[in-house]
Length: 516
Image (cartoon, rainbow, N blue to C red; front, side):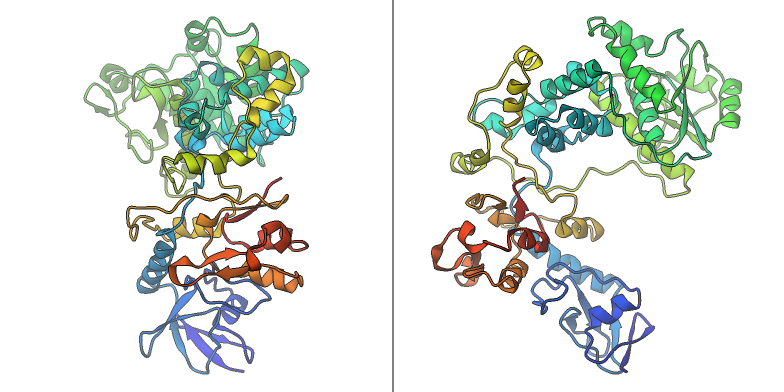
């Protein structure tokens, strides 16, 4: 039985095992991208590279057999740099958005593609639930928002943007009218309690997301009624809508403590004794007000660390208009969501840092010919008005079908994207500044193929062969012109008669996705 070492850890391997197999059996996780369990390793991406200590050579662990006495490096700065370079080379010609422009531009990163998918299927309840998972007070916010998502909607390049905000509003209204709102299921209840001062968008958003994490939240406000500032600022909201949204907050365990003013250091000290963490989510906090609370200031305003969102007092956080007087409501909601993350990190003794923007490739402006590829799967109808959608679910469904599906359907499970985050890649390091033309192949009724996301790993070719497809898939062309296709210039439908679902599952990126 051969033995070897990885980063000074001795490992016994079975005869004939690869380094990757032996390492995984020993609990050492080496990253892979092109490797597919059960098939011969292609060793095309070099993401699984390890270093031979005796000569400094990098070898693919997926295809290299264990040799008695070999000494390897795996988790070192040099090896990580080599893997990072391999990933950055893959990104040099990677084309296709991870997140759709509408989701990427939304300050709260609302999962718009998932919402529209439910809408296309006619399931307004699930569409509303998806909106509430990512957005507090969704029924109100999508009415009053300045709609940056629609400004970024790629469909707007062709004619008019999809009526995203109106569709979310319609789904929420339908859900409330049915009397069966579905808030996200909370996590297991935690012992720590959180106090939130202020019941505006920031405070209610923070409470909403902390409640989802299992924290008991008490929202404290100096006014007699919760959300008094929202009532005053938006008097034309549909009757009962704000109270319905507050009722949903109460249903997940959020407690409101009205007519309670926290104006001095003693009152704040009482809160910090009662609660494990406190969030200041009030209106603009002046130097005088902050000083009265015993908190440090930055010029004429409350001071808080930009990364952790914590004030000068440990366990006391600040967000929203407590720090900045202006801003759109959706930005306040996003601040509350970020503050909830920081508070959870603090309470679970993790490093405290505001969440970074989600990683996403962004292909930018599309040419007219590229737009035609996007439009293949979209309705050709013009934009529907909000009133028409509110009285006719068919119009709402049709409007959702106008979406050109520019998000990556595998964004949440894409191995390339996850490794890009893990290895902090610079996706533009080897970019030439010019990009290839975007192509989308929808010849197959089940499969969508986006050539720009293909890393030429060959996994789908192996799977098609394993299913004994008559034609299957193959690499066609030479050199830089190599691309995935079907032999004899046949269609994707003919190449994947039996192996379509398995081929999609084998793809480590979003190059092959299901069209359902």
